[in-house]
Amino acid sequence: MKVFLMSHVADLDGVMPVVLTDLAFEDYDYELLDIPEVDSFIEERLASDFFASYDQVFLTDLGISKELADKIENSSLKEKFQILDHHQGNLFLNDYSFGHVVVSENGILESGTSLYYKYLLTHWANTLLARDSVSYMVSLVRLLDTWEWKKYGVEEALDLSTLLVYYGNEKFIQNYCQFLRKNREFYFVEAEKVLIETDHRKKQEYIEKKKETMLKKEIAGYRLGIVFAEQYISELGNVLAETFQEEIDAVMIIRMDRSISFRSCKEEVDVSRLAQLFHGNGHVHAAGAPLPEDLYELVINHLIDGMVK
Image (cartoon, rainbow, N blue to C red):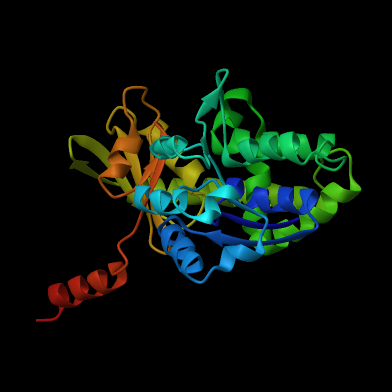
């Protein structure tokens, strides 16, 4: 059995499926992708018959366009392709033989990792996947990605995300592939605890500074708080949404090196609709959108035109 996994490069819910793949299969390859890259990556490999050498192909925590889904449905790839995702905007993929998109089940919000884990347990269960350390780590990822860690006070979920930032994707994957093979219980080692505590202080300072730089602007009827940030995107968005909830409907965080993120804490505000205005998608209270490919050129030209006479 040879497996190819594609998953989201941007966060813990995209990276953890690689670890699960390592525990489930001996022979596999993977690629971590950002949202705008997915269609072109698959299109190019469809054209070159790249997937022919794999027995199973997974796409987790990501979706594809309807046009590409139609193409796959009419190709041989559909026989070994499986999409496991939890974003509201990708529910249309359930109309295809390879689509499995679930936002929530039995009142429990799902994540890409939790759906993939369930799928592996159903079809490729083994003693490693069944370990308490693995199931607990999967639950931490789900709690973090759905923001339920805050509801239930599970700080370890946020701490795990902190370690991903420090380790980087590849080191994180390597570390936890080894850790979960060796340990039946999940825990943080002493060095990781020091990193987490240090990061907690840095995060608080960073968020306080960003509060001072937030701009307010109305877009399509939404009162938005807008900030530029490169770190602690989810935590920053939720703190700003809660702190300024009387003044704004949602927070728009522009990460110049990657994407736009939207957050809201108001029940009546669906930021996935806001994200769609920017060609993105997501959940009711957390969504994202890609940045224009020519953004840097636009910014530079604007600066030059405005400052150089």
